[in-house]
Image (cartoon, rainbow, N blue to C red; front, side):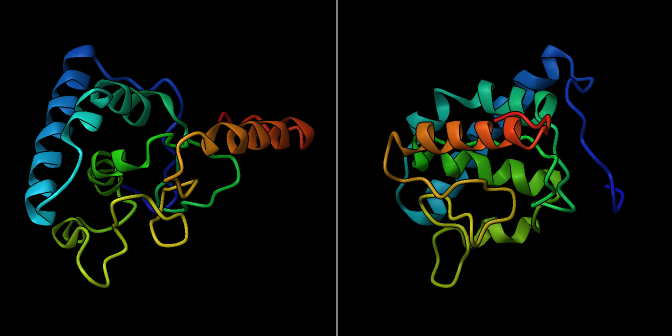
Length: 152
């Protein structure tokens, strides 16, 4: 990925590729659960297609600048799905792939639930189910009030 490359909304991605990426997300989840010796397979498995479509086609992102103000925001309601988001963020270039091999290990930024202060590309530290709704509404209203076009 180039230094300043922006992943625009509505990128070219055919359906077959998105299905393959969803399967890859599931396989990476299995691998990370094996590393951690615990995890939530079914939570990721139920939304792998959604994550694939959002991150590889829909969201406007800039992995080289995770706090870029014009990026679209994605907030997880069920934080334990982070195990399926981390491989995507690594694949897009937010952090090196070797971070995945240390998932949930002492000193690792990658925990069971996403931490926006430690993981590039995470917009909200979730864990308490339901908080993402009010935070997301606040982010969307902030965009409107600032006349910005990012989506939440």
